[in-house]
Length: 466
Image 1 (cartoon, rainbow, N blue to C red):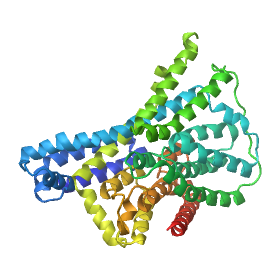
Image 2 (image 1 turned 90 degrees about the vertical axis):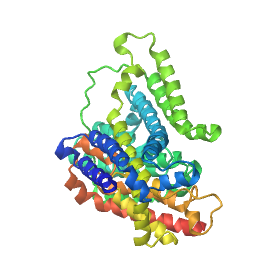
Image 3 (image 1 turned 90 degrees about the horizontal axis):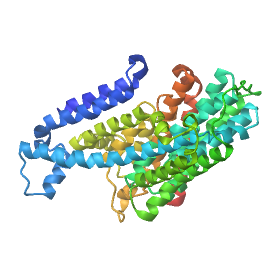
Image 4 (image 1 turned 180 degrees about the vertical axis):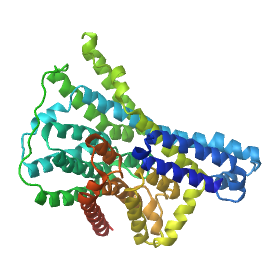
């Protein structure tokens, strides 16, 4: 069963990667492996535990010597201890994501982003490329890279008519969104996970990862600036459909929504409550505001949150539920612990700083093939947070240690090397029908150069601050 769990995970992940050819939604595959791995785990619990493969069980037995190591006791441990423990951690991330996605959808449905599109006047390709990339870079830090990509790709359709030109811009949006999300605690699912898990803090990740992330975006942007010549042709926009929101409502929703998202780190710092509670508080205030705004309007012109919630991407939430559940099973059973030992033995080991950097770099490259969410979740399971007073190589694993900060950068930006390597890339690919081979030929090398350049900057920054 121990091996079967890995087989289920690998096969399920293959189905996720081949979502389009198989025509099976990745959320369905993720939910399957998220439950099937736990089924295999509980049926194989006796063998797994008696062979000492599960660190969670070994720690539990050591801390509760009176507990009987019977088959019934092992099942009770999985059901009453492990599942409850992991579902609490997973629930924090899912509620956070659901709240954030709803807030962004409220802004979008109220056309709050229209003020941004109206302010972009240039048609020069290079200037527009820089403007779009910079807006994306900073917007993704506040809103998250997935929703920012969706908004910015929709914006491109109002700015650029030619499909292939839009592909270059959309690809740069993916790179900028992933880079922008890497230095913010709420900019990417992986940084959210590290932030909620206590591996990084708000101020540290912003100050230490911002410059490498900026370089990761600027290098491809500079190279594309030499190849993109001339001006873009703007499409003819159909204005026959009336706008149901006023300028005041659009601006109010944009300002309140962005401030609500930015409020979350402040909320966590002040109250010490989980971040998802701050996100739900912001959502509730925005919800109440929309109810007041629309209470006197006719029914067909109302933009109620009840209606907007139907547009929220629920399959994405279920996808993360399945993936995180599967990773939790592998962490509990012990496969991730074995993987950590393998990386330690083959990448220089964690008893030296180069080994730490090498492992993070490999995780970043892998994230271009395998989704970065389970990679980061796996890393969090493989390497525990060290005590604040840790010295020597263990100091790399304290909160805001070099391993966690560099992991935020590599996992966040490494996925840009392939169009399917990140949620932002998959979104852009789906919206603009970007060809995988086209992206591989024209963008992947640029993304790799940016990734390596940002990593070098982080390493030099690390040497200066040691």
